Image (cartoon, rainbow, N blue to C red; front, side):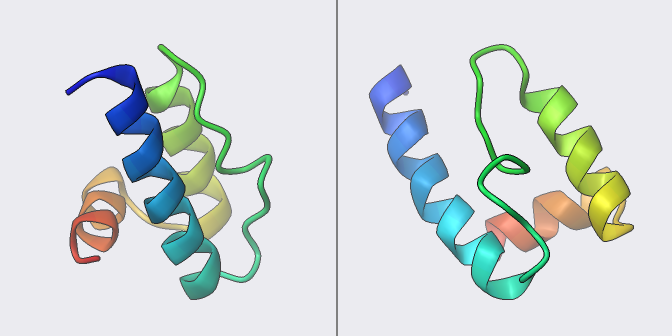
Length: 61
């Protein structure tokens, strides 16, 4: 999967996460190359979810 595909998929995921969790902002969901784990860590803290729960939420869409 190339960078364009990842960003396209991420834009779709980001919209779905924002619908499900109104507290999330664009800054919370900013995808930077090489910083996926950092972003997921911030989401875990903000939403009170485990990494596994976040992966389930994202893959369920």
